[in-house]
Length: 352
Image 1 (spheres, rainbow, N blue to C red):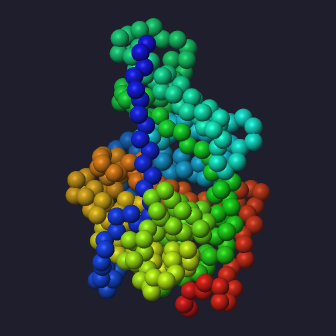
Image 2 (cartoon, rainbow, N blue to C red):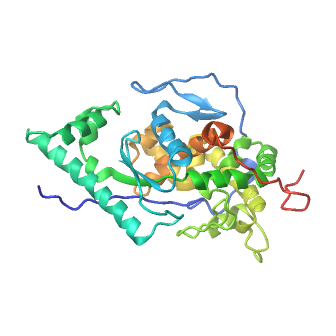
Image 3 (cartoon, one colour):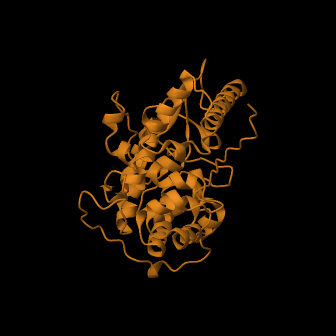
């Protein structure tokens, strides 16, 4: 069987990458904390939509939320899940890497992951060809078919192009737990900032997705700090004298994030889209709404903008998963979490 070139796209977009250069904060729409019913309508074939706190949780997103719950709280950094990057409940294998596994992988460990990812690409491409030409199936083929069918999707739909959608994801249980510990220093102050801005206070949990609460985090796209602001976004939403990079100040950045999210919510009209804009930009999400409609599930499943890749599609699901874990850490970390002490007087305190 000839196995052609298979290209996996894993775009990693960073915080506030497409924000508007100038805004008028006074004209943003006010957020309303409405009492929602436990379930809302959803598309046929998916579980009912619910709310995670005040945040809408479409039934279509539950497979992705579950995937990120496992990534954050079940799979260790020594474990690598090989999965379909569109059908997030299709996990082909969770492999344990040999030897000691640090935060970063060695070149040998990266080679192992790459080879195993290629293995699954070959398996899926081969199965697709066999079914297309009615070739005999072996036991491995039948097991793979059963795994695909267990996702709840039609086999021909999910298998079509599956070899091109194989992605690997390392577990981050250790990193997420450390983020929970660090968050103890900032949680009350961050929540106060968002409450004072008239926003849902659980937006204070967004650094679990952005940086695992690492104050000096840096991305390849130039985003810096716990809240991962780019220079252009910081200039708009963190006005200052420019002498000090306020992106490295967690509390100053939290104020900036509150300004940004308030503005994004006013422009986009709902929290799933506004939160996703923290990754994909307000302009990008406006384009998504214009092409796919205002139903967020439709945007995630149907919108195919050139920069709307894996990271953007999954950003809101990651936030929901992080929120659920942080709201009930004992359920996910039975050994307990040793939270750091809250900030003291004069230590990056938010205004009372």
